[in-house]
Length: 437
Image (cartoon, rainbow, N blue to C red; front, side):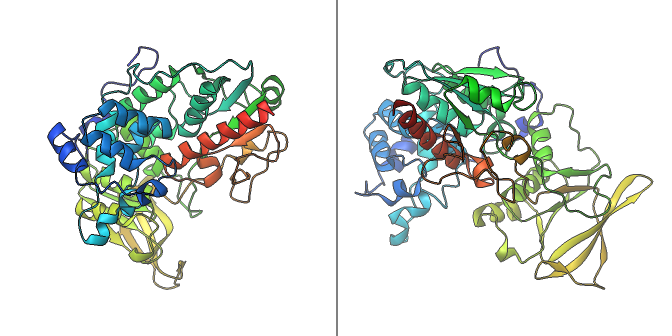
């Protein structure tokens, strides 16, 4: 890693070990040789970036590791992090035909990590330079969508300039990924490697504040908006401003990047929500030694939006699931968090007369994030829906302004890293078509 960007060396996330350790050569070869190398493979169809899975797995099986890495990275330049963070159980591995034969699916994520790990940060993946077009594209935000878009734009001969308001690039991939899946320094290593392909990065620049949206549209041939999501949504109940009530994104970021975080003396925590972010933060708190961690959800466990394998892992970590329960008030005593008043829920609404106290020394709210409509809507011609998500043409990523494109969480409301990468690739292709007429 270069000295350009610095992470604190004593981060809490470092106590988390890899959820799935890197394969040895023997393990990778054995696993790769189980693949049936399907024609018209369903695993490839299930990947939003359409990685040729049988192709790279066959190369691993024949000892062609560089070829395997190239196959992955040409389709998905963030294939290194996607190997670690993708929900493969519901994407590529979930589509593996071996499952139809009642056999374990191929461990595609672990093979992808094995193929890419040695090469991220090296120069092996150099591409022949396309003829320079003299066209310049501004990209807002430095998360996966913008990184993928800018990488492909550079490959097509265009100049890419990423504007990032933070001091360190990477977006939610840096600050919001559960540390047992990937540490921040690995995200930063991959990000710096992608930037080294010829992308210009300007950090500490907030679009809409330091540079106007109109100026970007005027000075650049096209604009890609990949700003992610905004602040966490709130519950809208009394007491949410009491110390000890945190948003999930804030909590995960503190665990990953904040060296001063201390959970000493914390015995109980309540996580509100039923999605993957809720299960992530609950698992992390349990792993960090909080004895009683509960997930409170307004519907039944079977209705939770989190992936089944993530819910299972949270339960295995000791997290309690309390279904059909809604918080109606935060309890405080002398300005400090005491717990919650919760009610039994029917059809996601509190049932009057069922209120009870629920003890918790920390409350984490994980009910989703609002869109970034405040910034995005300043771009001329760009519209957002009622949830603050940017409205785009699904096939092109083009907004209501023909020279402005968007992708990633600010469009889809918060999906996987691989979806953001796919959005970025698609937008780069469409921008190129537009600029070349």
